Length: 429
Image 1 (cartoon, rainbow, N blue to C red):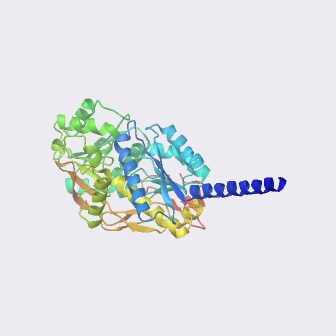
Image 2 (image 1 turned 90 degrees about the horizontal axis):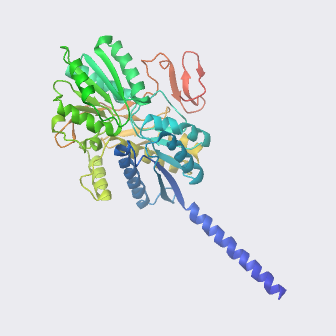
Image 3 (image 1 turned 60 degrees about the horizontal axis):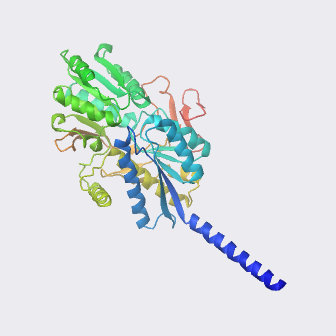
């Protein structure tokens, strides 16, 4: 009896051990990927599409066999356009859900909110939206445009092609518009633009009462010099802004607006007929005519089961970042953050405009700059395109930045190395 009990106990232990092993194997058989985008609140108009794009990319990668022979498992959270909640959700993804990397954020304030979490927990964030630069972090890979890949080329285009002499810098009141406009103001003055020919204005997130602000823009543009609006308005405030432009008859031939945060998705809710000819500066438009883009749009429509769903620039940036991460993980043979971070520098993948994107030592990528004109159908006609430009993390036009460079390779391993003093600032931003 005692022998049988011992055998039964041993057998039970073996079964439990085997079950535990298989349970662990099942858990280890997937690689979790975090998706951190607002699905509610003021930024949902822009970020929901990025969530959908990430799920499509993960689904397509799984059809190819996953990564390292394992399926990818998306973990989606909703930080609800609440900047402190972004940090909480990021911590939850990394600590509780054990994700290998996170793809997320839109606004710079949300990115700034999560930075300390990614540094503390040594995880990886791919950030897919144009922003103000002035930052280079070891744990972040920036696949959206830096100012030298969007804002400055847009101003150059307006000066050269539209003869613009007066400038309205109109933005949402947070870090991205304020820093971008600080760079643009310095750049414009370096080009000889006078103080009286620049006005800067900020409105809150979700701002909707644009009548007075658009009237001010019209009055400023009535002084006899060609005037343009450089818009860093973000989120759903763009819809009433563009509607008011139409209401007040602000036409592109009189006062062109060039936007850095308005793409196909934002225009989907607007009557674009009064806006024809206004501009946007991005690094991708849905209207780009390449085989890669045609395949991507076809895949997007099939995945969403909706031929009316548009694509946009941050989707391409997410596409590039995701494919870079896959390639780096396979190159490193592991999802270990330190090894993947090192493997990412130098990785090149196809973009959707017919070229390639390369991850540089400053964790920024190479991108062409495209200027597009709004068409009646809500798409953009590309009127200007540059060769690939290397993203510049620190601005040449700000005194505190002009001597800084970033290189996350050894031996420098620094995000703000001062070439004048020969010292690292000890942090990335």
